Length: 235
Ligand code: SF4
Image (cartoon, rainbow, N blue to C red; front, side, top):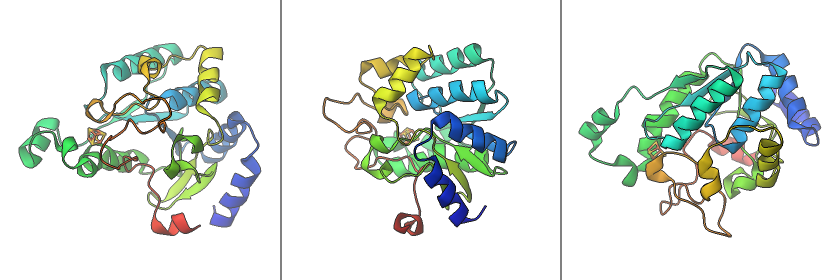
């Protein structure tokens, strides 16, 4: 698919419902398409939508070995509710090896390196062989996400990226979860709109950006999974 074609399709999907975007993407790319699921609020919405469109669609997640207990709980609840088996990808380096090489609590000194080892490398493996991936990112979440398109070329990973919820607010997302009785991470009820690894996630205060609880104090807002290349930033 050419870049111009992707841009045209994305434009035409701006006012469409996420389910319509997902239906098109799954029909077009299956079986080389997968949902990258963090089991955050947006991703459980997409799991629910996918289960009603095509329950065989591939779902994977990155297990850093540093997820909250509440996240592992919701993974189990989602598996049971939808009868699915999301594939887990992990770093080849165990936490013990990481500590031996880089010292204790690498995330507290160099979170980019830690995310690179525990998230970015496993993601590369998860995406290999795919033509498209689906994510739950929304424009409202942060400054770095405000220009995200519904369908875009992911230059960094070399495949198409589908973002069906870009136009949704946090309220839209919660409404869908409640109306459809979707299992969700109970940390979302405790002022964690965005949940990552436990050493790098704190609750958000009123008026703060929805992702400000991630890597607080580091000026870092993305783990490296949704970073754009310089070229893409200019498009
Ligand atoms: S979010 Fe924190 S703990 Fe998790 S991989 Fe990134 S730096 Fe490491």
